[in-house]
Amino acid sequence: MFTKQQFNIFINRFSVYLATVLLFTAIVVGGYKQTNAQQTDSESVVLTEQEIEQLKQKIDKGDTDAQVVLGRYHLAKKNFDLAVKLFRQAAEKGNAKGQGMYGACFLM
Image (cartoon, rainbow, N blue to C red; front, top):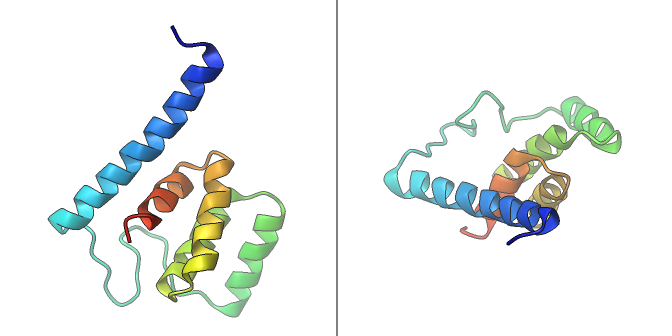
C-alpha cells in the first residue's frame, strides 16, 4: 500500500500527466485555436509594459496565476526558455494551469 506522502506524489504526477495528455489530444483534434495572438480563454497574450510590470510585482508576492499569464505572454513571443521557467515555477507551487502548461511545453 501507499503511504500518504507516496499517494500525494502519485496524484501530483498523475495530474500533470493527465493534463498533458488532454492538452495534446485537444491540439491533435484541432480544439486548440489561437487567432490574432489571443488565448482560447479570457486571458490575452497581448500585454502592455505596465501590465507586464504589474504581473512581475504580483509574482514577487507569490501569485502563481500571474506566473502563468506572463509565461503565456513569453510563449507567444517565442521566448521559450523564460516561458518554461515561469510555468515550472508555478507548477512546483501547485498551480494547476502551470502544471498543464509546463507539461505541454514538452510536447512542442
